[in-house]
Length: 377
Image 1: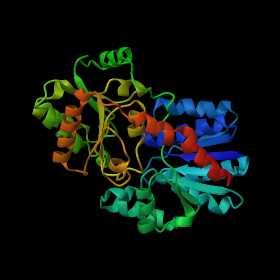
Image 2 (image 1 turned 180 degrees about the vertical axis):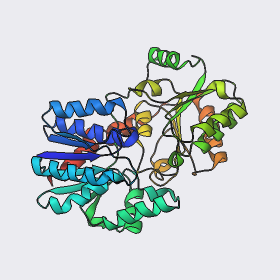
Image 3 (image 1 turned 90 degrees about the horizontal axis):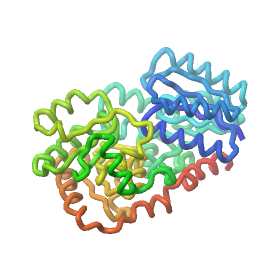
Image 4 (image 1 turned 90 degrees about the vertical axis):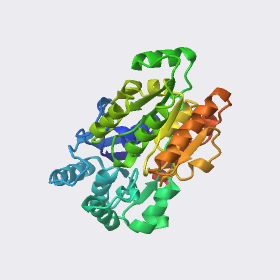
């Protein structure tokens, strides 16, 4: 079997998802070709491209962004030529731009199967405007093409009710965590991780990972954290990621007088060290495709979590997690209370079931294995 993965962007959760899928398929002996874009990317994308080439696959750099542009026509021609050369059995598009280009290939690919993983529809956050209207229009026009792989019941419901995707043309397959890599920190690893980021060894450290953009709602995150940090001089905050809201959030921290205990890191080649430095993870997203990979990785490391009850993560508070606190999207007071509750619980040292849940439900074999079964069905 030969699979063509078409993807944009080359960083953050979307990249982590299809990167893991590519490695899983290659390990299973599946031939993989990759059409990617390095416009938004991290060094790990280059490593993935080289791995695909080493295994005998062909790679194409489409050089596209997430916004519609004239370069999309060139990218479409590149994909058509690649399909005609390589004759894949399956084409799998990831995220909105690559998903649109993939499904537009249907007329040139009548003998194969097309799959699309949205990784969170643009309209799920309820944001209005021309961009939301355009993306929703495109999704509706292409809703009938191929099989849609949604990551949560919330995303699947949105696809049916708002975009016209038929239930018989969709499946739900969750994100996985790389359980063999993301392990609970030993005392030595925790000490080393904190030293790496300049964090006191005896501090209480909460963290978050994500782009500083509307979807992740970092304003609510920072305001809730700062509110508690004013009352707890031993509390530090470690944030991994960057984005267009960076200046506003930096100004907010300065005004609150908490800048010295708010540590910012834009990127890490290996995020495991980020989790090893933490006592808990906080996520305040307005919407997600499903349980985000960063939450699954934190759980794999045995960490307590705080999550928004947003589209994509609405079920997390009822999933039987032993150390999980929640808040409604945008509600600073609810997240402030959740942070306080997590901090109050830490000294109890209760046993956690988070890693057990990951090992039972969210391994690559369990999740990517379902994707491969769909390819073969």
